[in-house]
Image 1: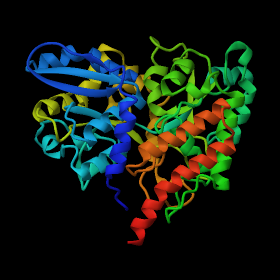
Image 2: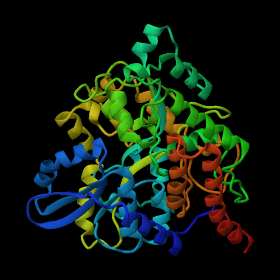
Image 3: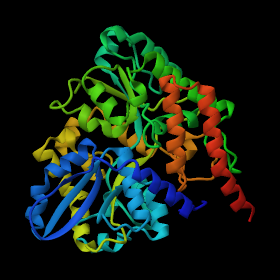
Length: 452
């Protein structure tokens, strides 16, 4: 497998993104002692971790944790800029299986395997195998999962039953469009489906790329030719954009994961295709009006066996940290089996971070509340491979992302084009043409490397 290294140009691009996207950081902390700074994404599960900090302080009174919590796009840019340039602001960073192998190769993050091996009862073998492998480099784990996810299609089973509709066992994008059309009721502020439209490589481009894959398209072919203007990619983009424009939520171009989560959980959409981690909120009666009313189906397909992605929000320790032992104390606490039980007992079993540890699904209380989605989650994660989700080989790792350093910038730029097309600010043809030019520039570098 081709292993990309982060280039100075890629790091510079990441810094440029961060300078425009790091406003709004919030620090939370307390107590005295060795202070560590933790940069995380402000998703619901991460906010739960902040709310449980008294438990961590009770176990580690000598460690004072301060959080910088940011929306997903801003967090990516801020964390990348800091780690890539050796800024040293953070002792723990929340990254993913996109960054982990590249940053490990570059020496930007610590090898956590020695810490794992020396921590009694931590049990790294309990991690979901596909996630553990995705967060490893040369056989060692360089980040550990807070939660893991694939993607699936959530739908209002109660409304389907009322309307006499049936969700296919393996829905296609054509099925999704027909069902969305049946249930769409914009006059009641109710959409047939919710899909991300917010610009960003980890926002609109995550679900859209799975559509591109299953239609037979892609970002690059095996010879590093950009293929964003191929007929297959074009059909996927047109299908995705037309679906959300015709049957999706109002203001779709500014809807990210969080917006769709709120909308679906408050009963304003009939379907939602997105990350399996949604279940922690969707099935929580305290924050969702549709808990217990939702069914889950595999990611919609066209020409492939499956279409789900594989992703993990994970915790890593930058090599520049001066508090590595204290950082591991926090990382191991937040990713241990005991933490998952703590969330269940203190906040609710519906809120347990899913998809990281196999043992989670053996906890009786969790098994009871997750019976509607546990199997669907694990099946989606286990089936998320390039071989099953793509029609042809590609020269890079990743399913819903391209595992090269330049993708943060490239994916962001293409995401801006697609979001603009969803908003009607540019035509789909214009968005595709500009995206192809962006991808061509990146492809030239990799073709040149292959020729050397």
